[in-house]
Image (tube, rainbow, N blue to C red; front, side, top):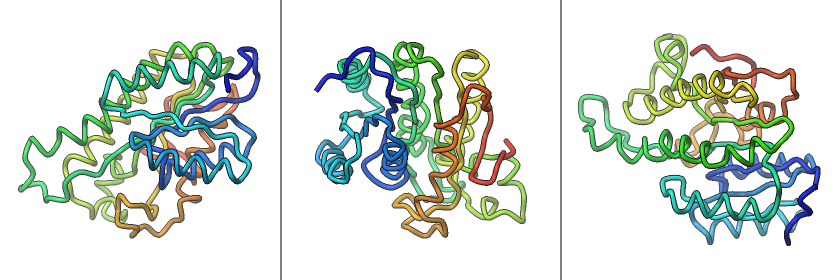
Length: 244
């Protein structure tokens, strides 16, 4: 059902949201009374996740979205536009881990799929949704990054991030951090921040993380919920600022 174009409910779209951090972000934001669009590339999994959340009484709607496809992104924008006149929050959560090869064994081809999703996908989705974001009174964008994209943390021998060796995934998150910084300066009318979920048990790490998905979404939810005086152009985990 199409919403009244003058509706005042807070609206949010979360990419890669059929499981893990994305799904928990949807659940938590919908629990605030927000209108949430659960975006995922796999229609069956996305619809199944949405059905479970709506059965719990939450205002969640599925939007099919493959972040590496310009056609899919355009269709998703139009689908959201048919349901609301503005988008208050965009959470760029979709991401893949890629190869587990050590750096000397990694080839250039190993970067391509990871960067298509984690970097280029975030840029394409952000740019496509800007008109709907600009229609909101106080738009926010959350880029779901990782502590392993922090140069400071990966070079600190006391941090677990320094023990995880790889090229495509960490470098994709470092790139996303710079993209966050640049967007925040180019778009001062939008609050744009990067979130580090921390070492959270998800499929991305074979559920080896020590945090729950609820703990892992703390920073995402907080940044999605900030007010007009909130930060922009920053990098945060559930405990506070993260060094670049």
